[in-house]
Image (cartoon, rainbow, N blue to C red; front, side, top):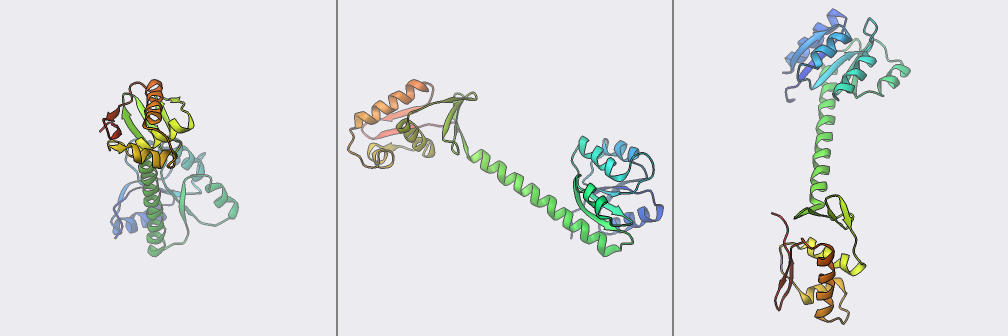
Length: 236
């Protein structure tokens, strides 16, 4: 069963509008209004919550269905399902420049209406899921380290109030590893293994690298765990 949608019908043929309304009601949806002109559609759209618009391509008057759809989407993006008495390719192509989620060619029946709306709803849900996942990835890709510092894991850069702080190659590698393992105690041995790839370096070389990072980012909360290593404390 489809989730209930709030639908605006823009159709100047009374019988077609009535048929659409009856079928969509039967499918469990809420018809906010049925209107015959683009101006009426714009007026309702600005006042009401609308999930989908069934739009007649061939509205009478100065504003046809495509122009009306463009004006609706200029105000707020909404999925459009077009209704037309013919399927001329040039008209469909022009309609594709709007937020089209399907179209019905007259005469249509209940199954056609249910099918086109079902596909449209799935498309909307897929888009929402994609946006949510993309947002989650973006959030995971940035670490708030506190005091205005943000580390971008994708670009491997430290930002302070939208300004990039530049580091040398080893400084950047060390900072990156601390950020990836923030709030964890990292031993000298683990740092040598992962940053310097087991090269023979002294602990003082690590301390010098940390000092240079601290000098460039003095408010960054890097703790020295005496006799063990370091810990980068991030904002919780």
